[in-house]
Image (cartoon, rainbow, N blue to C red; front, side, top):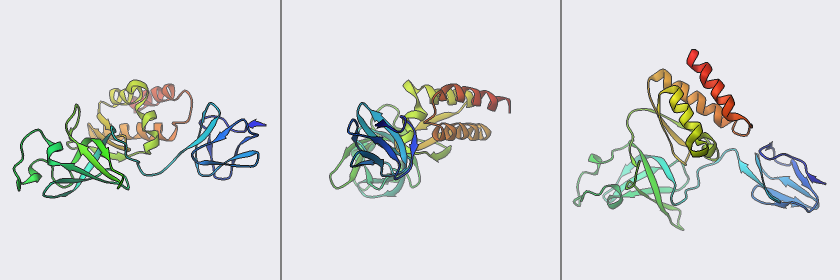
Amino acid sequence: MGLLVKDKEIVIPGEDLALGMDYLPSYGTFREGERITAGKLGLVNIDGRVIRLIPLSGKYLPKAGDTIIGKVVDVTINGWRIDINSAYSAMLSMKDATSEFIVRGADLTKYFNFDDMIVTKIINVTTQNLVDLTMKGPGLRKLGEGRIIHVNTYKVPRIIGKQGSMITMVKDATNCYITIGQNGVVWIQGEPENEIKAEEAIRKIESESHISGLTDKMKEFLEKQKTQ
């Protein structure tokens, strides 16, 4: 009786996670008699008596307050439509785009044009699944040239690390500017070979995020990269 898996273990659908009534099923798991079973592929998360799964894939679910990276896909008379790597549609209105007064009918592409990448913040998610964005706030800006990669949104906290420790280590070792959106979009800017090294490091953190002692492993990995 009790737990059959460890915290942060990867499990597959149909795998038994616990026996008996000591634990409670939550997201991604279900109870069948005495057993709690995985309903999908995911990472086990044990919180007290609650067992849930963190999905290993899936689209970003927008939350008010998240800072994300988006791409301008349409310019309308009222603002910009932004792709935020989600099933939800996002809009940046003129009033939230700049503190400048924009005259009605002005050419909005002077501010943000098609395919521009921006660091933006979610201010509201409506019940109709529409997302309102703002550019007013520290660090919110249009991004310049650089490499854009996508990572699993559930791995973003691990890639950033405690107080930004993990990503700071990658920035320092690769001499790149890196911005990570909570929607799993990452912007890397540096010398081309350094951008590749930074991407390799981020991919390694993403694929090994469930391993303990990852910080030391990454230090070693980045040291090796320097000598290559």
